Image 1 (cartoon, rainbow, N blue to C red):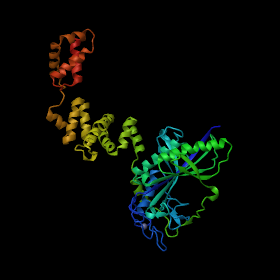
Image 2 (tube, rainbow, N blue to C red):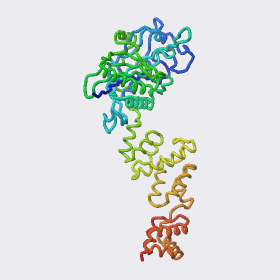
Image 3 (cartoon, rainbow, N blue to C red):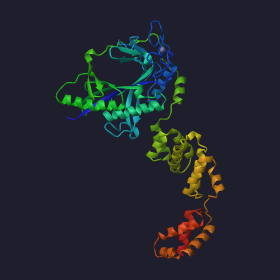
Image 4 (tube, rainbow, N blue to C red):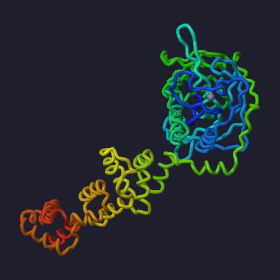
Amino acid sequence: MEYEAVIGLETHVQLKTKSKMWCGCPNAFGADPNTNVCPICLGMPGVLPVANAEALRLTVLTGYLLNCEIPRFAKFDRKNYFYPDSAKNYQVTQYDKPSTARGWVDFEFSGLGAGTGPDGLTRVRITRAHLEEDVGKNNHFDRHSGVDFNRGGVPLLEIVSEPDLRGPEHAYTYLKALTDILVRGGISDCDMEKGMVRCDVNVSVRPKGTEPLGAKIEIKNMNSFSGVRRALEYEIPRQIAAVQRGETLRQETRRWDDVAGITEPMRSKEDAHDYRYLPEPDLMPFCPTDEWLAEIRAGVPELPLPRKLRLVREFGLPAGDAQVLSDNLPLGQFFELAAAGFQQPKAIANWVINTLAAKLAESAGAVGDLKFAPAELRQLVELVDGGKISLKMAQEVFAEMFASGEKPGVIVEKRGLAQVSDTGAIEKLCEEAIAANPGAVADYRSGKVAALNSLKGQVMKLSKGKANPAVVGDLLAQKLAV
Ligand SMILES: [Zn+2]
């Protein structure tokens, strides 16, 4: 019998705010232990929390980025537990009324579990993204332990996926896609080494093609995205082998050992926590107004993947070009301004991706510091298109535009670069070349078509490279046909 894995992820992400969730202490990584603390985040008796408005805004913005609904009523709850990392003996979170729910993440993926979304993309549904506070960090030394509360009270989003994932690579790619969105949206820096992203995995196995879910096993303690992938690469075959041996798997929490590369039992369902969630009495429900939501919605940035799909659709660009122009936003914006309404956006894309990007890299410059405008790059492409200058000359003109910011038409004029397309003048040069090269003429007339190129080269030389090559070719062919 064939088995399949059913995987859901709970991803905790620290929000990028200046201060903590309920107090004015800095939200900063790397300070000495217990220096970013106050009576509020230490949970002293009698203190009252005040919600961080920026954290609420980032939560709603995350909801929009993940295509979620934003309920007009959300509230906070206390999750009660006794452990040294929480001085209050509870963590403030959102239990039954979260701030965002029912969204999705679409991403490009081609392995097991692929193709569940529109446009050939892979979709993972988001159950909810709720706001809570981070807790302190326990540090264990030789003969004692200590708690650092700097992290306690840092705003934290818990993003819960539906069990839509089917394999280690699928889960890994989803995590990358999710955190890319959050970084691009300015929600979090998602630096896993600084603990800004943490991830718990729920995984079970079932016979392929069946609906009921197997016993849910939670894995904790992965400290990198590749750790999540490795934990699943170990855990899925372990569960399948156990089921095939006739064992019944029970719901449990397992711990990933990154060094040994195995998962091991941590606790079973029998000793699972009973958190006794209670409504938080010190905080008002969170009821966003339509105006405020509209304001946040208006600031939702275009994400790289939708942007890439749009560039392909609107400009007919190859996927590779669209990828470069969506990964590098300033370059992509420059391209769009230059190519708007232009017949050959691909020609502009070539200039932007090859020539402009290379020049910028060479000079360690930024698009924002360019001395010429996007419309002037379009003018340069038009000069080539109209046969005014050759592609080779255009490179020279571009180099000067880049250095001085002078307009391409002015540079061509000043340097006398314009191609000669005047047939009278070119005709004379053609006649000169024909007279001087009787051998090539005879070759061409006897059927060696390539001999025309050698004559063409002579004419170009006589014109000092300024003759329009297409016009030269036409005239030579006409003359030799007589
Ligand atoms: Zn504080």
